[in-house]
Length: 380
Image (cartoon, rainbow, N blue to C red; front, side, top):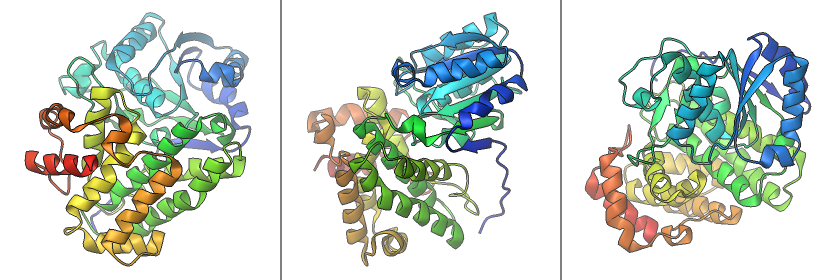
């Protein structure tokens, strides 16, 4: 087990009606608020009105940036950061899923830097502070509400890297499962896939920590148990609640305690598919993970057996992978490239993008030949 420090500065507000604490919370950080959100969903489901009412109750001057995409782009980050600078913003309130919160994190770093946001990802500038960020979560998936990571893509360079900074942990995050009840079936499924993928990236990382691995298996088992029930009853608050808490725990640090690193190779594969073809993140992961597991199974047999026994009651690596794939299909998520509109003739473009982006795992390394073989497994 590696030495480790546990420190998560995010204050999490979880449950029905927690949005009523937003006014008092925002007022602690200042009066000038940049409200960042996606498209129209928070207006049609009534959440926008609730958030704005809370901000007005706090006496806030509210400036808005709307239209963040599900695969967020750096151009939106720059545009929102400019609004923040011009209006002397004190605090950012991000209302949405991981894409909105991730974008808001980079906006929070970019405003005081006064640089193009992409220079952060190029490591040309080093942040020393950030605008305080408050998150209101609307999709159980990424765990961005309780970590210091952000992923944003550059449509010009065709890159989708991750970025970590201790300055971008949200100060407060508000998680009311009621806000996820209107999420459509396919995006509910993709969110469940994403939380499982986050847990697996920690599980297959470098280092051995039995208790942490049991945390991982418990998170995945929660998703495996309640995911199908939720897909049959999308308005069930109790099921939404369980999935939302599992998604937060899957990437708030607890799946990596005592490990040197997670792996994150599968996310790299998925990012290439998203940046090239604008495929939903969770859909790329449900395709990539079974193929990656099959390709590396001879090197991770003990881990697969442990995972299978704890989660699926299986007794072989092959049965564990089959069970995971079957579960993804049960949710309605794709498991082959053809299901997301990708055929063999796109192989070269995809492999070139992966090589350009230096796609590999932090534990299980991948070269071009490995990526080509995994592509073939995703295809067939």
